[in-house]
Amino acid sequence: MINLGQTVHHFVRKILIVFKPHKITGKNFFYFIEKLEAKGVSKEKIIRFSRFVVVGFSGLFVDMTTFGLFREVINLSLTKSTIFSTELAIINTFFWNDLWTFADISQQQKSFSKKLKRFVKYNIVCLSGVILQVLILHFLVRTFGINEYLAKFMAIVIVTFWNFWFNLKFSWGAKKKKGKASGRVLK
Image (tube, rainbow, N blue to C red; front, top):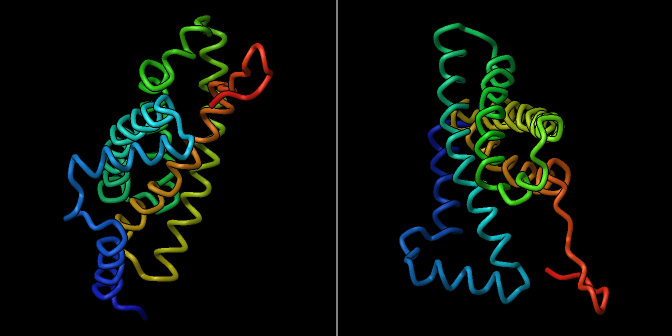
């Protein structure tokens, strides 16, 4: 069996080597943003993803808190705790994303039926993410012996990218704009 302490130490060490948090400053953060823009990523997408991540932190708080409640207080299984806590986080993040992250798109789709349709689509994308999260969680816990809470956090981070991309395209229906004169796609 794999030693949990050694596994966590190895994982944390790899994160520190890759991300070098001691070297993150305001200056190189903005340099990183400039590099993204130079590679064709629009400021709008960077801001939107940043908002999605901020909203995601509120979802992470709801998810982890209720996960602990379901696991430790109610004694539900790992899978049931994950599914229930994640659904509560999905409801929370949908409303914040609709009000803030995707507000410009939501304003064009104001009716209750359109909001309900976005919510259903959002749930479909995120529940697909839940399945992915459960698979990742079980893989990390069973294969590497990683602590359930650390494994859950890692799975959430991975699934965040899935959720952003598919929700942007499917739930809120964001499409690339075409230039009028040339017909070329604008970023």
